[in-house]
Image 1 (cartoon, rainbow, N blue to C red):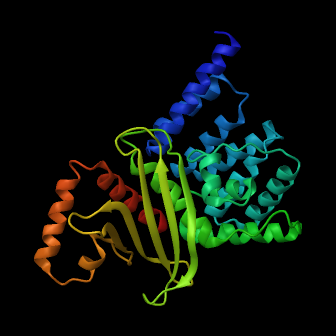
Image 2 (image 1 turned 90 degrees about the vertical axis):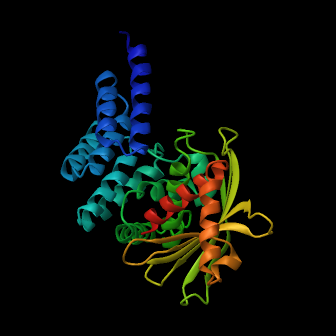
Length: 329
């Protein structure tokens, strides 16, 4: 097989690995990446995603070793230092993380950077993250960290940004980092059965950091609109309220669909309570949420069940809500 054919086949295997990665089939994804590397060992993205998959499998030390090999083999592939820094965060080696964030920023300033996320894409991410490609790259890279580690990573990365003293690179906000990653993940998993490609979506912040009467929590109000022009759930919008305490512990979420309830102008909503135990989930409308009428609430739930059979947006929104909350917890 010629070198050109090898590269084509390797790219197909790499894409298959990315699909398996998104579906949580990490052993399968790793196998695809390894096959791609065997056919074309000149592409650092294959090695990088292979190392990222090792992390998802809990093989952290193997991932660190592979990232180090990438840095040696591909000295112009600066993204590896960002990946390595985040992996050290997972390993509780924080000074090593800082050193690699410094390496990454030096490489980024020299133009030694290629954006290749496993999930999401530069066009989609820009609409959420907004400021610059550096911010997009960093926030996307911390996708798989839990929230306490995300907060730590943001603080350490901001420390390095401050040390660089370059006004071009603005401070990364913790709430934006956590919530935008959660929204990105939720969009991907909302309708995966209908379309394995990542949605084209627009997201904007309607209102930020307003203190609510709900336990004095701080809330961000996001608005998401999807228009993929493919599949039964090709176009819809969601109004998203996310509530957190000062320690970035998320307590509530409310997601309003564009679907109006029958015989009323009220739209269907999903309410979530994120406690220490399993999240409490409920479909409602504004008036129903305030009602103590048990029979009315039961009838409404029955309506939702029947609607799922004929309105794909209902199932899609429920999937979105579950994925969003799981990422925020």
